Image (cartoon, rainbow, N blue to C red; front, side, top):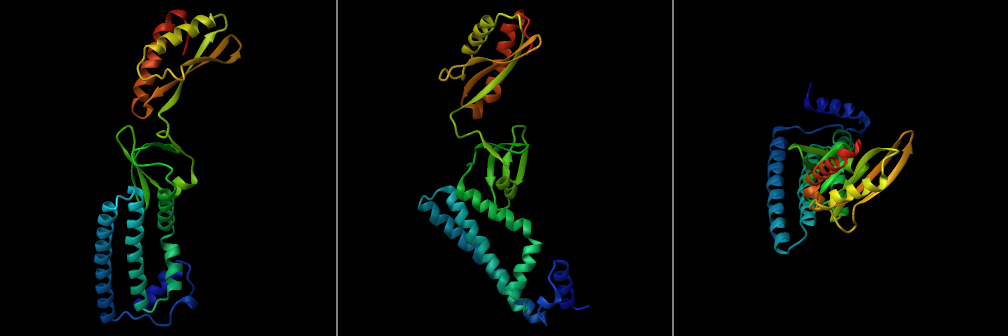
Amino acid sequence: MDLSEILRQIFAAAGVSAAQLPADVDFSPGNLLRSLFILLVVYFLARFVRGVLQRGLRRAKFDARVEQLVVQVTYYGIITLGIIWILGGFGLSVVILGVAVGFAFKDLIQNFAAGLLIMATRPFSLGDWIVVGTSEGRVAQIGWRGTFLDTFDGRRVIIPNANIITNVVTNNSLAAQLRSEIKLTLDVKSDVAEVERQVLRALENINDISKNPPPRVLMESLTTGALNVLVQFWILDAVNQQPRVMSEAVRAVREILHPLDVSE
């Protein structure tokens, strides 16, 4: 079986019919060497242009995200044009190339396009604390295939860019402070006014809990024999302080309310 027949079978597996394939594909040694030479030239040209663009955009003080977008589009654009040129030398049309690439690299193309959209719309920046589905952490890198998150337990998670575009993304870094909550359950006979006073006093002594807006205690719901209470407070610099402040708040509320026989 010659290389032309092998190529036809590969295209057939990708969903390209025999009628769409060229009658003859030139895999002569001379054409292979020519294609290898073009591939090397295109690769080094793409790297050279990428370096020139990076230095020029940095000197012009472009935004880092714009710089990354322009550099990546240019780099992969040059390589793509080179591949099209090489395949054209074998007798393959651009139409066939497009169909084959569409089947073989569908996910890569989707993620690349989604990455460009993320860079253009800026739903988050490097260092932001975001939540995507079950993944949560700080944005370490926005790549052409996926976005890299450094989780709070020391792991790195790579989320495909297409998943980010199609899912709900929560950015916890846009506001200077974030609201946190503690839920309490009291006996219906409890002195609600005394509980509120004790809780607010406990939160007043914790650093990094905002005074504006101040903490508040809300009666959430009433069930048989129990009153559900919601304690709300805002944490300053929540991106860096949220776990520590939340822990201190729960401990302080527990210590003050323990004599009152209140369950959390």
